[in-house]
Image 1: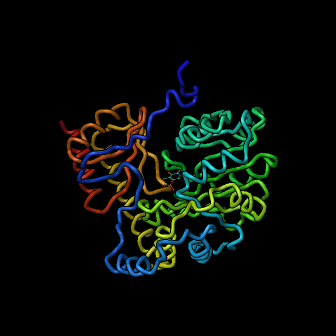
Image 2: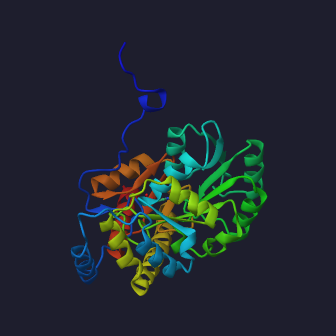
Image 3: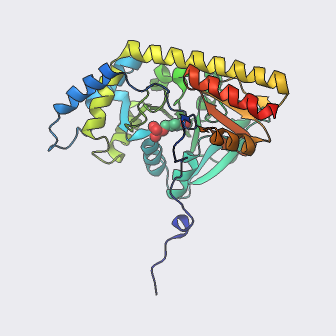
Amino acid sequence: MSYKLNKKLADLVPYDPITGHYDIRLDANESCFNLSDSLKEKIAKSISQIDFNRYPDCLAKAPIKAFSELYNIPEELISAGNGSDELISIIEGSFFEAGDTIVNVSYDFSMYEFYAQLCEVNVETYQKEADLSIDPDKLITFCKDKGAKGLIFSNPCNPTSLGLNRASVRKIIESLGDCLIILDEAYMDFWDQSLLDEVDNYDNLIILKTCSKAIGLAAVRFGFAVANRIITNAIRAAKSPYNNDTVAQTIVSDILSEKDYLKECCDTIVANTKKLYSDILAVNEKYSCFDKIMEPCTNFVFIMTDRAEEIYRFMLENSVAIRKFRGAIRITSGTDAENKRVIEILDKFFSR
Ligand SMILES: *Cc1c(COP(=O)(O)O)cnc(C)c1O
């Protein structure tokens, strides 16, 4: 007899993002702004004061306070994770039991299904409309038909860049009272339909936020879950005690308290994305080359095209990394100069 990996692990492969050197990275929806020298100095000073021999604060009180002040949410409704990724894993692994069904939607963030499978939670996938929008009534019916104990989706959506308005999301939450709604607002800083300040009205809602996108701290690994007190206490109890290290807690507290800086970055990213979108529309005017270009509520543009693979390769040859899907590409909005380069390369590709 020899040891064998179980079925759920046997075919699993490590996450494989684009590696190698590319001059321009527009594949992971990160912020295009690194921290300024003065913010780096502020962080360095705070880090130098850490007692490195001590365990971190289990409840990440300092970053939670900073988040609470930035978004105007009571601290008792907030828990912290090692990236939203860890929170997704904790929530799917502890709010559901093996064999329970949760619903995700397609297209959406692939990690929802990944962690669910590891927890032996059954996943039923709701297919969006042909225009990639979600019909709330159809989604509600789908969840009821499947006896879903949970529903998880991103709003605005990664990768489609489309958003569902507040009223529609409220209707979904209210119509599925015995189903836990996990609403991932990773990109909501770039749009204006957040339900964060209504979270305490619901006993079946968790909103996820990340520091990896608008906040510009993808290197640090920090995310937040916002929910009523009962759910928040359950998340705090289910997570590993020291999931957020002191270095990360320190950096996140320092940056989340920089309200003006964060707003300025966010405004610039939104403006750059609008410009990138309209420049891509112009490329399409010139060459009629794309099937559909989504109007983004996010910091990236999603384009339907049957030449996704070719465009992706051509971009890489020109040292620009973007993301490809079956029949689509996703381009993160970068700096002005980076976006200009993207348009030049697209123009070169289609003029051949
Ligand atoms: C990028 C992203 C996240 C962030 O995950 P982290 O683990 O916090 O970096 C979460 N949800 C969605 C939909 C994302 O696109």
